[in-house]
Length: 286
Image 1: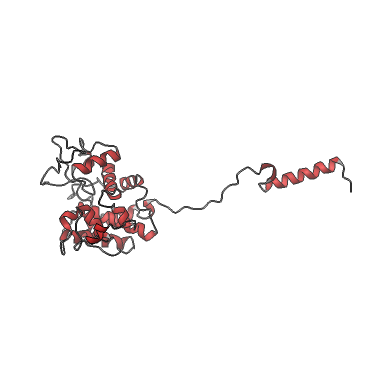
Image 2: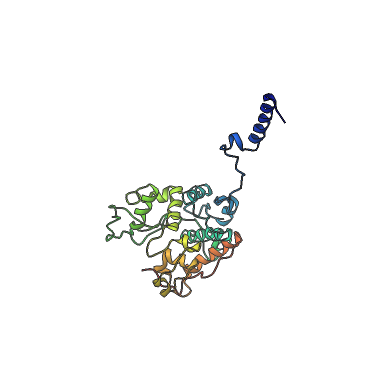
């Protein structure tokens, strides 16, 4: 059957239009619009709201607390954005458990609670922003990598109570402040304070693993760890933070206080605590 040129041109035009509408043919290289898939939210605020934060730290802004109005929910969220792995690693229970563990440890470090305190002893976290009446200036003169500045004290400051020149120095380098010459900023700037706590939490310091790795299941015990019974769990985190003073001791009150906070926060976040809560049978890190 013969077709004249006018018919053929009309037929070709129909084919081109149809092909273009299907994203192939003449414009086949044009990328199609991708199907939108909602990503898993890594935002800490999706796991702990302002209301929950306030219910955890019931008394942090009481007049009796020296850190009144210092530790805010907003600065906590801003600091957490600097450490994207925090609270975003693993399945939902793991993420919640890590957040509960972190908040429990900083609560103990800054606690203003006591046995008969209103709302219980585990409602008084973030009451202090710096150590009161320190026994020393926490300067290790043998650490030449991070030398102490004259007249400076490297006492505990911030949520994790960052201490010693060998912690202030690298924390400041990582976060953009002079930790050796201006350690006081950790108690004067809420954002920096929270960042130092999360820096300590997420940074391994050999032979210690990071607290983060322990809580999200990335800790791999060495031969020495196995021999020292350093098993994964909240107790190992306590060992990392202050094991030299608290671990290897049966029924230590400081360890029990940390556990008390952890249990309360885990209940609020609706997650189990996991095993190995104490470190009484663990040897401290060398």
